[in-house]
Image (cartoon, rainbow, N blue to C red; front, side, top):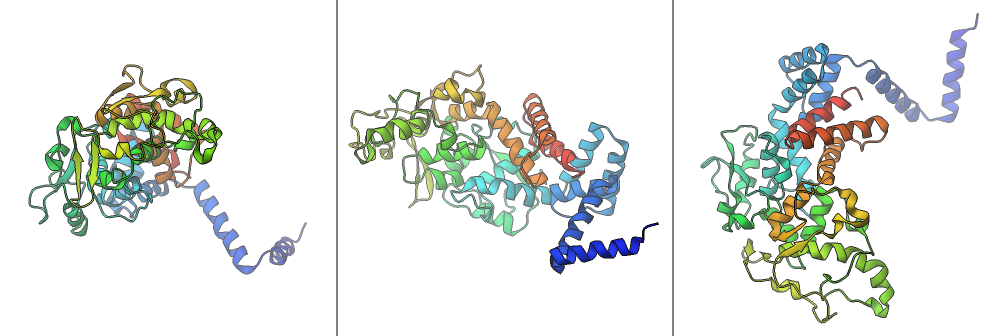
Length: 406
């Protein structure tokens, strides 16, 4: 019989020659984590779901309820366990706040105060509002009248900062309520476009520039693609604005091989924002119906023969060609006027739905879908999301269930 003590000591000595003490300790921790995951029972799985969704430990009573549901098995019971975790205030005040915060600023930082953009996302998730309307609805979520000193305003963020400072429970349907965005911002309902026309998004993406930033960051945040991925040099250049030089640096090949690839798709879509501007001095989103903002004519002498914006019409040229995989809804016309109709075009695409699932997967599972099982689960969750009314809570629940044993 082998001397097992000798064998163990020999193995440990071999490790010691290869690794330092802290590295051996780390290996032990990782192995322990793998073993714990492999043998996680219903109670451990329940705790993991709650931790991932709410970010705080569950009470004993909630943990036991979740454990019993998981032990009973079945998809309905598993989702019910996740729903219990999402009843926790911190799912809304912390998890969802951190989930949406990067979409509201150019730096994509999570370290920003609560604002109307984030609040609207939180409210839509809580109330199971059709999330495909995120970029088109006349909707905002605010604290009930009098709950904080500052009322919602078009020219400051005080109301939302006070909600956060006072730790107002955003899961409470009586204290945190929906309202018309147009009634706060003082713009027509037809000019609202969900979070794109929120004050926070306006301050970040409608300020100065040429309003292309609003389109680029909406694409990045809600379609999970940046302009580089959309590059298509085969589209016609007739809608590219005058500020884009056709021979940058004196070399027309740069335009034909690079610039045209982004601008031929982006400029026809960004026309939807022609009447919007964020006024830095007043801190207010301005909407000038029928009058194109002067910023659309910046550097118009770069190429005077280029497209000159005359209204807020837009056209989606990515419905054909290499970007058709984005999966736009064939029941929609693919063109229109204004940000609201553009928001509906983007929000009803296959890629919009898949992007929301991808972001939730990253937030809940703490990784990208990385293997065949993850990708299959993400596809199934996306399909369910689209077929059951774009309910984001269901996406969080299904994703947490998928990752509960990992």
